[in-house]
Image 1 (spheres, helix red, strand yellow):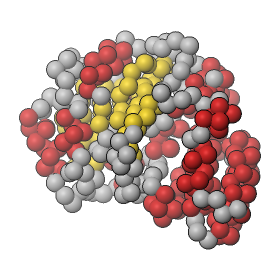
Image 2 (spheres, rainbow, N blue to C red):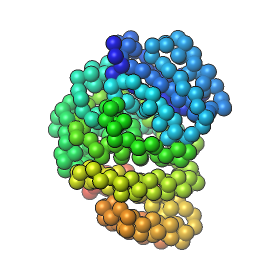
Image 3 (cartoon, one colour):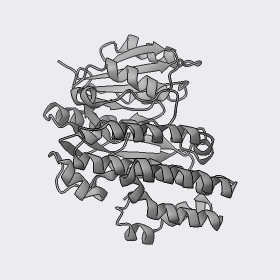
Image 4 (cartoon, one colour):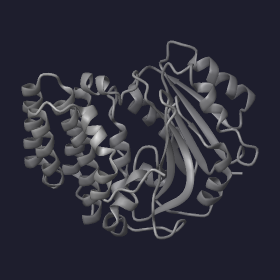
Length: 344
């Protein structure tokens, strides 16, 4: 039977987590319809040996590709190029999937031709044990929506229009993708923005698939690492600006989506330099310069971000920390005012 879904597992020094990740793909009902491609990105530990054992034991399911280190984006480029499935999905090596939901997902993918499919996901805080559900809220699951419908009901879909929620039809991805940036973090924003902005049909499924680990201080999303790698965020923002300028075939709704997704990373940059950077003046200068650049080079994103930017700039002057801001953003009043869905 032909492969319906290719999972790409970019892996670098992940021997502590890889067993849990790879085991989660084993399901008797779907083993003949999925492929799992582990891209060993120049690991120095036992990552390749663990992956090799799975390839030897389950040769019809697992494939191993070894390469010199190219970073997360480089590993994705390699794995996505090698994928043979009808659809493709990326799972990081320190995360895992909900095995029992795999048969339902494969059956849905087998019977659709949608450019993009969305699944729910969990975040799992490894320090506190807190689990949050990140869901879509469409009027009906299992039917395709246009970008016009998506953008007019953004809050119903935004939590799954991410690296963790998106599944691409393979030929659609190949036709519309770019080569993801190598040797930088946060290039997953490129992956979730391009080629998604070119989609003509997006289908949300009422299926939880991805378990995303958070709370590890070594992760790229920790405050310290985001500040230390602020040049990486700058590089990805630059790439998004460059690709937007090239996008002559993107329609109006795709541009709305692109601007919204770029806004998310831009505000992440602003929050980091304004609220995490201890030198407050330096942080303001960096934030001001980035906003001025977007005002000139990607105005739709600037317009979406400017009100929140002014709030963060004021918080910077008042020396309000990111932790304080996070308490505010998690409050029920704030989320009610923002019309955000709960995580229940």
